[in-house]
Image (tube, rainbow, N blue to C red; front, top):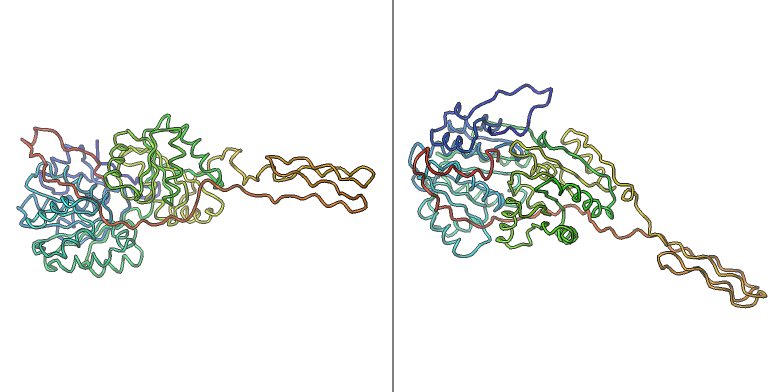
Length: 501
């Protein structure tokens, strides 16, 4: 199996040369680990970023999720560490969320399978004091690689016990998201503590707005600039959409899942608000006990357990906020459903990028209400593709009116024009009946009242998604890795994630 390229060329694009890892002058230990994980071909971002990084150049890379950028910055750093024993903290890798820090740490474990001398420690918030003590020990003794969220790392650095004079590499991964989450001051403080003369900076971002470009110029020295498939979903994602009113979204998702759950193992549903996540999860769980929610409302250990169950197949459907749009890497997600259109077109790319990973195909379905049509058009312009519209079931198409809003008929005229008239008929759905006849025949009959038509409350909601600003997550002690008995002996390194992220 090869390390897949997740963004195959369009028919008009030139065919890119296939580059194999053994052509990139990586150390034997790294090549052995890649071979054990069945990775032999480099993705475009890996082929373009690894050579200048090996040469010691700063790198500014724009690459979307799923293109293999994690290996693009890890492999050249590990190559240098494999050739000379690290002294103290050698590399700091900054990640916006605890989930991404955990993901990078898992990949480190695979790539360093034949390099037990290289130690690493993930540092992120949300756990107990024991974890803080483990992190403190790693910083004091000088773990070679620190994978951290900016806020948690600053909490340690403010205490003054970490020696950063030996740091030779800093990686800013998902830099655009770290800026959006308000970590810019922490990042600048950390960079200012590092030795400038000997520091190599690898800067990776999914997007390149002006503020990111300006920030990169302040910290990079004559960087090699690389741009790979900016804001384009992987070609293997089959993108589809329904035009559907808010009130019908829950029912439509139930119909979609009724069919898809028969053949799919993992389905991920994104909602813009935590309230929507809770309400939709409760409704879907009545018919499928393998539906669970994941949001920032959960305790960290509960979130980790649910993601573990999702990976293993114990949970079939996860309903989540955008906290997971870049925060998880799980192979085998068959379908991504956008309950609402994300407020940022870039977020759409990251949401649907959870599927069609590791050479697999995937499907993405978005529910579009009337107010979101213009927003979704902006997404189509961004991805340069007209998304296929599926036929909405006829009973869910129109903005329905409350049947029975019209009252019953008016009452009959009283006898001899002077007695009380008869009562009106009862309206549909137990609405009040029509107005009774006039008590006095000489008075004019009052016109029959019509109750105002009302639209029912939509069970869904489509408010703009709230961006969840989260600091890091909890650390995991990685010191207990097993040393291999021999290059060809022992178990192969776990391939929890592909070389593609």
